[in-house]
Length: 183
Image 1 (tube, rainbow, N blue to C red):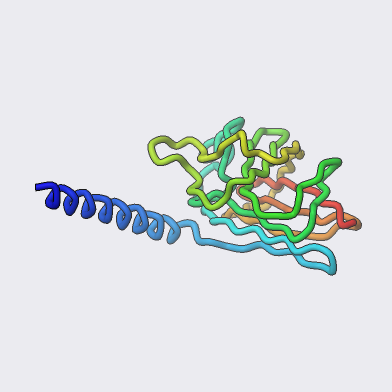
Image 2: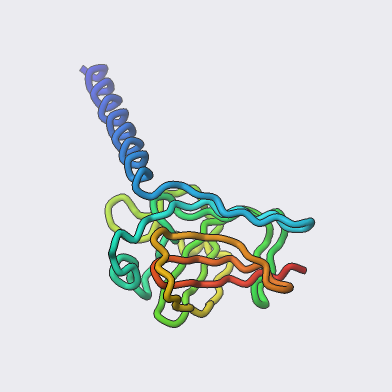
């Protein structure tokens, strides 16, 4: 009798695993994975994230609410890796790999680097961000810029402006710039 129960439990666990993996693959077809990179003689920065589409919606605050932690993309939590310590404003992010979270606001966004990475962006039972706040390493506040350009797909990219590497987060009519010191 116990052998039958073990077989049934194993089947249920296997089906649950396959369903979860199938759902993750399915959702990525709507929000594909992209990688933003920056490299110079000193820095190697890589951001891996999923790109949701606007699809005619007003993103902020309808799709992504203000003052609520966001996984900064879709699907898995966005991951950022750096080969060197990064100086962001007057704070230092030690070299390593982190998840990147944001708390969007109308005038400012909080940018959060968390030492846990690889997790799905939302908790399984609720639509809350799957972030362990106790594992936050660094957070900064950055201003929000509005543009007349219509940015259909959430995009992260790097640009160099003088002595700064700028990590841009862009979607809808919103641009947020994270300044990283090149020195």
